[in-house]
Amino acid sequence: MLVGCAAGTPAGPPPSGTVSSPSPGAPAATGLAEVTVSVPDGLAQAPFDVPRRALVPAGWTLSVWARTSKPRLAAWAPDGAMLVSVPSAGQVLSLRTGQVEVLLAGLNQPHGLSFAGDSLYIAESDRVDVYTYRDGSATDRRTIVDGLPDARSPDLRGAYSHALKSVAVDTEGDVYFSIGSTGNISVEDRTATPPRATIMRVPAGGGAMQPFATGVRNGTGLAIAPDGAVWTAVNNRDNVADPATGTVDPAYVDDHPPESVARLTPGRELGWPYCNPDGGPADLALIRDVQTNPDGEAMDCAALPRIEQSLGAHSAPLGMSFTNGQLPAPYASGALIGVHGSWNRQHPQEPEVSFFPWQDGTLGDQQTLVGGFQAPDGSRWGRPVAAVPGPDGAVYITDDYADAVYRLAPPG
Image (cartoon, rainbow, N blue to C red):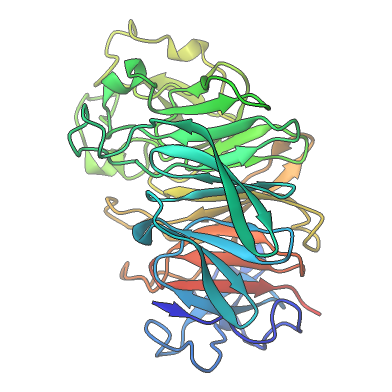
């Protein structure tokens, strides 16, 4: 399904929204207010066939900007188009005011998108390519790396839980991309060729890919910070045993392990599947996984660098981007992370867009930027994937559950 963008944005004024007093369960202490999601004519298919309410910063508005089936990651092109990946359709879309067009089709589960000048990098399930982007077209495809593992890889025989890959390009032109783990605790990923559960790097100008960070179960969130550092937001493991008892207790599983948000350096080890982050929200220690590393011989978890930041267990962080002056304070500098929400928690972890303020070269604690997608009974009407600042000073949010792209606009 392709449905057009809401007319009048991003170049025009923000769509109107109705701001009300916070509902009894709204986190008023964080400065959020409940608003009605604005839905332009022609975009009111389900779930927007009934009014939807969301939590946003006081005075901000949230509107449906475009409708398309299962949008995932996004990047802004130099000409002002918003590019969105649709892995399920093998497409990359171009979204502009009033129109949604297919930029590229016939790709293998395209997911990550990144620009470096007029060069567009796309991470498919089995390869990373770069295109020349000009005049609204992507041409001159060049392969950065191919032969990446996905469900079609003969040795995996169709069993691959994390085939989708993300890509980021730093200021020097080095290319980073994620290779997720095959499954929850698939130890063989660490010795596979190429190794899975990694963030890989290809140097500027080309060359062989090499692991940049290891033990990264599924680092779908991948972005370059204002200081040029590489950060990842990680989906950590499920059904972990309580170290105190050695048993898988749902009460323990609900809150363990936290999801990692980490600054990567060459050769950094994040521990999976032998070590898990513990504590938080910041400066998390890594502790032994008693199922995969019972005696500590597989990996010395205490010797690993502590994890900089975290989200709640089973939050499922997906897209990650940084703001660097595009938004008003207090959101002018920091990380935006699309939180998909849990699938296997007794009390479901809520979907949201999270913000982590940038502070002295690192990230402060998680704040909710947009919430309200989940009812008290755990039912949901939306699940954000990615949030990226737009050229108009708004935040654009993809949602592959509601089949929508939202525009979150500050006052004025």
